[in-house]
Image: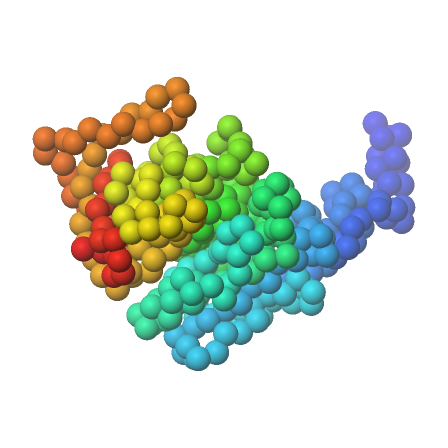
Length: 334
């Protein structure tokens, strides 16, 4: 026993020699050489695994109702600094993330931001991971877990309450949200409040075959999913507490005009529908869905279907599969 104590003491006073990556330093934690973050928002936390921002550049911009004409730099990978002084601690936080080859300047993201800010009850954080979101789908898919972890670290570092956060993700961005939720639960045993998935990517390079590799309903207290192109791009099966199949989810009316862009047009309809749902409430109707061995869906009407609000203002206790019918031109919601 005496020898063991001497060994532990000797180990404790040794210089830390472990090789650590960028934005991390070696430190003795519980008598063990450990890499701890030196980023200002996570300094000294041995439970936070540092990510090299040169490999996965991710920046976060903050917009608040106090100054809705200004978007602040909330956190930048290059500086490693997080400015939480502009956060309204009394407001909930909505985080919006783009998808494959996307950017935070996309119309739907800016329109959603402006619509939320007018309500004066939200902090809006935009996740810019453009350099890691392409150019190849396989490369972007490989970065999804890393970006999700980085997002989770920022949430925890800013001392935001996970249960008061909603992450809205388009396509690949929905899986980023899922991995952020997984990381937060693993590190804190707390759970994100809500993930809204707009056309969650169904490509094997991203979604994989197992729940741990993609978004699933354990990643947040409430996961809602909008399906608009299950034929080719979007995830076919139900993966949320509440799944909407818009016009049965495969091809959207009005997108047939150009067959070469049909799937892409249908895929992006989820963006327009979600933004419209922020300012307009419409009802959707419960429907029964089954899948064959190729995950193709068959829909069966119910004799007495439940009806729920579509989109942002859905009751968070809602469960099941719902059908939403829309117009072929904007505004889409009927």
